[in-house]
Image 1 (cartoon, rainbow, N blue to C red):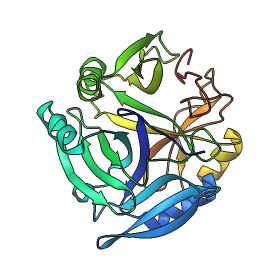
Image 2 (image 1 turned 90 degrees about the vertical axis):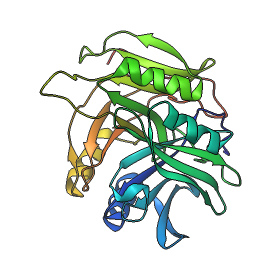
Image 3 (image 1 turned 90 degrees about the horizontal axis):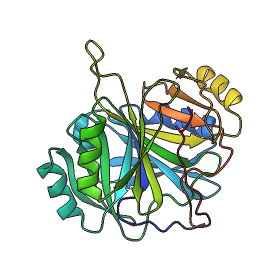
Length: 275
């Protein structure tokens, strides 16, 4: 399947880490990725695929995105990256990687939103983004965990033109908002406890599908990572937050149905409904 994306959709995910070699070994074992090395300027970019289809990238934090380990970054499609980058800053964000042409791909940039979450902008050309969604080992959802949900939603609505759907409290008693493009769900926003002394920066969480959550959690620990929050029952399958050996958070879900719709599906998604 070849994905086609609209402006505002999450089209790529990339792990920005100070130890890309260790990350490559961890994710290849955990998610069954095949990793090929591509030259990007003076650094190496690790392109990760499942069944010959690209699903994610791994970058060296020493060379990209302000030299800091940003963890998992969700990239959103834009039609005019220069204009979108200016708007992201005007709305209160910080541009940490100015628009940069990526050979055989398109143009990418990285931004820190006003509440600390790293995300990317991507104007695709020869490479539209991920080549498969929802399959085992592939991206299936993106979620913003934030203590500033109302202002965060306002920021991304202004930047990407989203509408929203509100959902009831999760088992953690935290409201959940789904960002929409028309009737298509794009990403979720989970409200976190932001009361002192729990002040924490916002963070985008990447969800990957796994064949067996229980087996994946055993692997996470054996490979040097750590399960953190979960398991949580959702209408779309059991999920669990974990940290990789570099301390970067992601979510694993044993998917029982489509989350984000792909080009062959119009099913909607909300992994936090009834959490």
